[in-house]
Image: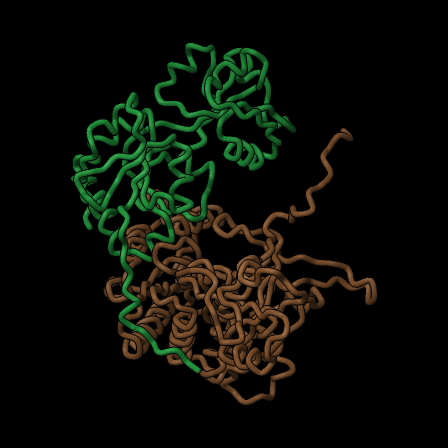
Length: 383
Length: 232
């Protein structure tokens, strides 16, 4: 067939989009607010490159996201390069190489874009902005709690205050299943059933742990209630340790932020898949997308670390609309001093480039709310 | 500069009612009794398929029911348009939506998902020798997975109904479909050659809704659990 229509120049590949005014500016402002909160808590910014050699980017924690990663051949070195689909593995690499001798605890932050081969059902975007923190070195409940508290504060700085933090134990299910010794195929079926909270299938495949696993599935909910169920359940020691850690984290967060909504889902083990300890997902109630994800992992498979990655695109959709900067139309011949003063007060000054007959109409056409007259500012639209 | 920490504002609030999606057709009739036992009484015309309404209030101001096609129940719940739903395990197997949790087996809508073919061809050769097979079904993903696990490529012809006609008219060698009594198969000269899975209906919930409103969603799950006579 040769009668296909020529491609529309506005069409972008699936999962990619243009951000226009005023959203692009609002997004930048929220990222700035998030990064300012991180900086205020002593997190220092790093900026890893977009591309790295495949074998370094995808070793360590990065291996878990290998299948989501775009790759291309470097015509120069003829080595395969990979485009980051997640920033945490890069920060982990920096911490264990260039900053290996930097004093611990090492607090690092970053903001940037990531690309992935395909989106998910819920989030079909393939280019995803990330803004996050990594706390490298200590392995204790205070570090885990700090990530949650700083994350909540950064989100509140973007105007998002109705938040819900879901805490999970990605190692709990593997720990419990290791003791069960199920045939591989049955274990796969059980893991899938647990992931989908399908109690009927968990009963069918759960062997002697079936009843306990069903109770744990149904225990997911408000942190105190879920912890109550967990404390009443008889666990092997390796599992008990994970639960004690979770309880300590909840206690620390509760003491510092009593009104923060915390839920616990002991069976959930989704996430970035490199997590080795308590992990968290941030939601805004009523919104069907994740605002952030994080948790404990091992930096280059040895050094303990924890972190949180926020998703500014999702935050932009969930947060209350910030008022864009007010715009003032500045006709030709205005006093440059007055115009500078306006900018200092936070106005955007839109300079005329040629004389116009009706300055008010021109201001309105250029989406300005005000016009600068020799006697001062004058509103051109609205009230 | 750090913004003050407005802690009171963290408490979530919900203004719109929760939505429970119910499947049209066979299962809807069986749902009625279960809803009654769970103490949910939708407006009476919800079970009347002639009614043009699609959304019905219940005796709980904070819960509405909607009536959609059984496959669409899963889609409404996966995308969070409905927070709760009732649908067959066949639909969940077909879509395998990661955003759906299926916390309760409701024990209604008993049937099985099976492979069937013409009486004349069944057993006429050894399926282990097949490389490919043409399958007529409304479950393309299940059919592909089932045959792939047996080393056979399924060439799927997707139909929305009347699968039973496909083998006799030469559209496909086998069909993959729900079988309740087997009478439709028999009437069309087909025999069941394998059961892929036994099927019952499940209570399903949206993952994010359960994560963010666990008290509210959990209370509805507990109601259904109590209606089934399970301990809470």
